[in-house]
Each structure stands twice: as C-alpha cells, then as structure tokens.
Length: 316
Image (cartoon, rainbow, N blue to C red):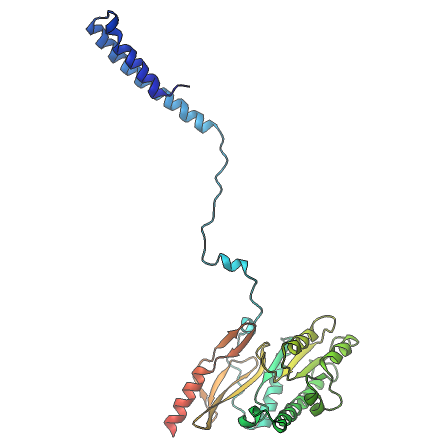
C-alpha cells in the first residue's frame, strides 16, 4: 500500500495543476481547500487503520534479561567447603576457665568431649601436650618422645572416661597415627588402616580416638571413620597438627606469652565461647572470633595477645 503522506502529496499536486487545464482560480482555490480537508481525514484514517493492524497482530513477549549482578561469576565456582565456623553457636554461660595444672586441663578437656559428643559427630581437642615451648619445637627425638607420652596420658584417660559414659558402647577404638604414637599408647593402639577394618565388624557404636594426625591423608582417613562403611559413633582427634581446626573444638587452650613470661591464655570448653584469661585466671572482657582458613576455623588470638600483653606490662 502507498503510504498516507505520499498519497496526500499526490492529490495535492493534481489539484494545483488543475488550472493549467482551464479551471478558474476561484474554483481551483475552493477545490484545493476541499482536498486539503479530505487529505487530513484520509491521513488520520490511515493512521488509525495502521495502529489497529499493529495491535491486532500478536507479538511474542520480549524475553526479560536479568541485570548483571556482582556475584554472577561466583555462581560458577564450586561451593566453599564446610567449616566449623558454620555451626559455631556458643552458649555464653558455659566457661572452662584457665587450667591450673595439666590434670585440671585433662579433666576439663574430657568434660568437653563428653558434652560435645552428645550433639556432634566428630570433634577435636587442641592444647600444648607439654608445657615447655622450646622442647615442643626443637625437633629432637627426646622432645618428640615427650610429646608422644604426654598425648598418650591424656588419650588413655579419655578412653577410660568414654568407656564409662553413655556416648560410647564399651571400650573406644584407640588410633595412633605414627609408630611413635602407637608405641606410647600401648599394645591396644591401632593404625588408621587397621581401625577402619576393625570398625567394619563392629555395630557402629564405637567412638574412635585418633592421636595426632599430621598429613592431609591422615586427616582424611580419620574423618572417614565416621562415614560408611566404617560408621563409627563418634570421632575425637587429639592434638592434630597442620590441619587442626578442621573439626569443632570440644576443648581448646592456647597459652599467651610476652616478655618471656606467660601472660594468660585463650580457652574454650564446648559448647561455650572462646575466652581470654589473664595469668591470674581472671576473665578478660574480649571477644575472640573464629578465623576461617579454607575448611579450617581457628580462634583469632591477635586481640587477646595485645590485651594480655598490655595488662601484663601495666602490672609490672
């Protein structure tokens, strides 16, 4: 079809040229004005018809493109690994205090384990096995033997208390992750491989105590003991290294030092919070947050270190 403006221009041109063929000027002017009105009516009619035609033809809906978001590419990444910080909801009324001796530390840690296994499947305890920091880090065979013996003393006490508790049916399965650890634990200690085989023939109601895993393979094998086909009733990791913080802490204790002296420490008794105490055992009003490190979560003790150092320095 001819567009309306073109049609109107054609009619107007024909009327303006009518005088050339004998029409008088008054009649030409009258005819031109009449045609002008006719062209307006025709143009409006054509516009109305075209608009009706457009509205009558169905159109597919335009797809709605969502606006780009800041985390668009984050959805393409794998989900983050589970972290103990995800389930960290401390009961503020629970407090273990600062240990006055290693036996006090053992008793408090055992209490934390028994309380945690009521609700958690796998936990860990983390504390210095021996008091001497230099002896723990000098790398000598004699110091390593002292650490193995100290871990064994706590693990054996823990197994005795677990055997008398309701969270474990009978004697727990005791696992040493190194030959030195198994030698210190005694003849009943198993390797991680033997523990997996032993748990397959149990009814799945045993608690496993794993002493001092270090390598990632040892941590993976230890945490797999609470999954099928082994399916232990519970897992307690005692003073693991390198990947410590992979499990919720049933008990945690880290001494703080400055000026060649112990200024206090950070401790946690499950299900309480991580707390800061000075050297006298008085609680310092300071929040100790959990710091995520991949799949691990450890208390951020920098604030506690500075507060205890300032308090200790002011008291000197």
